[in-house]
Amino acid sequence: MSNIGSVQYSKGDKVGELKAVWIHSDYGNGTGSATGSLSAKFEGKYEIKYFDNNGSFLTVLELEIIKNDQRYDLSWSKNGVVTSIGIGVANSGLLSAGYYDV
Image (cartoon, rainbow, N blue to C red; front, side, top):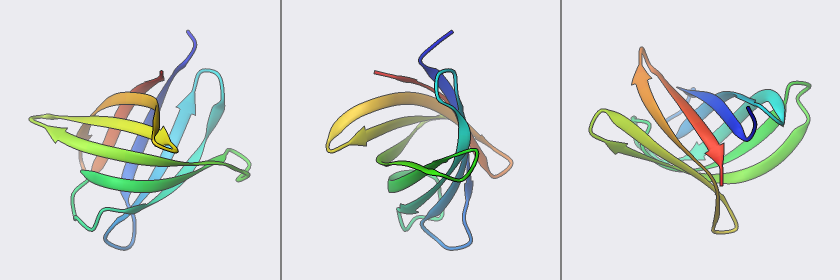
């Protein structure tokens, strides 16, 4: 398989922060750190910085998370252009999502 990935978000130490752990079929794996939404929930708009598994900076993306009944719809964009979309579920304080690049 190619062009797909999985990410898991947890709440950061402050309101509006998310921490990420990700894996991608083509780009390996790493972490991320997001700031944005002042909600105590996952939904909202964030700026997220992604790093590879060695901690080297990769990119900054805009992340939007929308709660839609029991699922979460996620989209990542760069300069207003959507780069990836995904679907997720929250459980035990974590948001886990699968995604693909568009």
